[in-house]
Each structure stands twice: as structure tokens, then as C-alpha cells.
Length: 111
Image 1 (cartoon, rainbow, N blue to C red):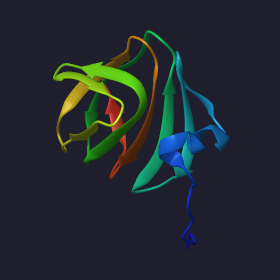
Image 2 (image 1 turned 90 degrees about the horizontal axis):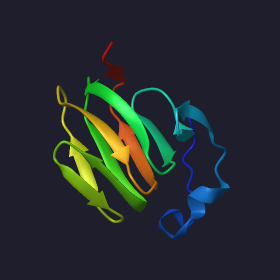
Image 3 (image 1 turned 90 degrees about the vertical axis):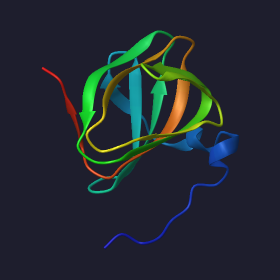
Image 4 (image 1 turned 180 degrees about the vertical axis):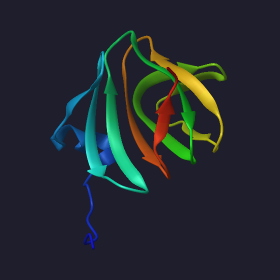
């Protein structure tokens, strides 16, 4: 069983102290909690794309810096986005961004 923990100042850049590793082309991930649910911070380089994927459970995204765009719109820093179970989309960050993401279940990439 995982013990409770905290990350100081996550909204003020505390995420910079996390350990990141490659995720997809142009993106890096810092796993905070793995399993179900999972929690991570994703860093997108300018122009990075996460290809089309389906949500097998709910996904909650808090944009910490920059912005990201999907088929429904563009989400600036401070936006909270909820992708419901069964929904699908692809994501691009034209200028780069950092997001805090919680998945209730893993995502499934198309193809």
C-alpha cells in the first residue's frame, strides 16, 4: 500500500523537481502514481502530438503551463478537462505545455 504524499507548489512549478522519461515523440512523462488510478505530469515540446487514443476510463487533465488542443478546443493554463470513458481524441500542443493527468484506467492507442 502506498503511503500518502504531497508535491509542494505543483501549480507554481513544483513539477520541475519530478523525474521525467520519454513517453511519445516530443513528450516526456513523470509518473507520480502507477496502476489504477494513475497520476502523472506530461511535458509537451512545441508541436508535440499524442496520437488518437480511446479512454477506457475517465481522464482528468489540469493544464499547468502553456496550452493543448484537441477536437473540442484549446485549453490554456488553468483549464481542467475531463475526458469521459469511451471518448477518443488526439492531442497537440502547438507552443508546448505541461499537464497533470489522472487516468482511472489506461488509455488505448488506435492502431
